[in-house]
Image 1 (cartoon, rainbow, N blue to C red):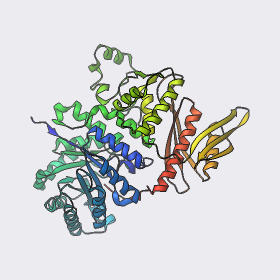
Image 2: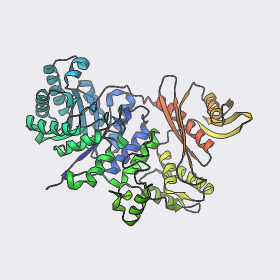
Image 3: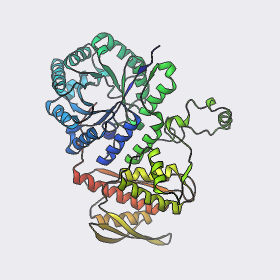
Image 4: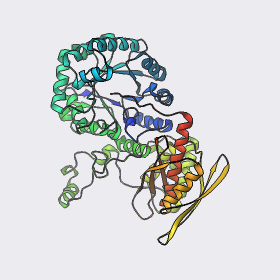
Length: 516
């Protein structure tokens, strides 16, 4: 039997970013887009161009940067949305306009306030408008799985005749089940025969925990494109997880008779990069990329794995890019060796970024006995997505104990001017954060604070995550690294503040719009 090729349409930068707490700034989106390109995804949905000026710039910049993937922008079925989407993606090597319109009775009546005939006419007219700009047009029938099949088939035939080259039938609210989803696509292929002339796409949400299962059922039913996100991030319970779909096809190629172009050894790196950017960790038992995905606790399992890994592992850790902590560099290593190692980890830094990362590596090597790949990756990942440093930490002094009130003296630089503030708090971290808030001069709320280690050992690099909320309700995350956990925490808070200033200065705020 012939093995069919499944296109991977990644919407981490659009649908994924709509997940609460997962917003990204321009530099972070570009870095993530470059990683998706390294993975060889077929389509990168870069954003929703009309939602804000910042999102437009992000989509446009990614379209101009990415060379080996299709770059798409989402658009509602309206002239303004479509025109704006084209403006954003027209410089891409392979631009795509992705428009959507709801087709379910529920959405047509209560959201669109339109009759089915009017929805049909709009879908066809707007697809034709988009097709005047380029030949790569995707139409999504929002809430397709809860639509009337006869009406949906009519819409499908209409938009294909108008120029759609990809038709997506999304399970927008994660309502369907695998058996239903398989039957749905098989029936749609019968009722709308023009589907055989275009790419058929599936877009599943995970509200019932069936996003991946439904996506794979769609593949069995003849779908040739699957829409998904790294780590399964997305609105509500998220989207179908790309890594799970890809590795299911990879591991069970015998069953699905299908494969993707994804470089699977980049999966763990992509997951870690997204976690570092958004500050949203995956659960330890998460399939493929969780900390425990390849851990074996039970004695009988350990014995079996030692004899033959296939006894309890259906895929190798190396196949997804999970390697052991090898000591790769030391304090006497030169910049050339450091650059080679950074490149092998999948990062492409310019000279300025490389110089800064190398200096941080040398400083770390003086403090740690052993420097691992994960240490270097943490340093470099943070540097690669670093926003302009409006505030820089000069020094800090902390006084704390169980018999005194904690105080912090923080000294920072802004515009070559040194600012120093003192504050008290419930512990050293609280005192330090309050002192920084005084320096910044605005009211901030600490939404989340986490501290962990990058690797093992008493000299492990501390990895701090801070999330702050502005008076307007916008949340910004920051990461900090240091062998001193208090210093790591302070760096994380300052990083979050700098992201806030950068985002507000450049206007990178997104208006939330309901979508597929």
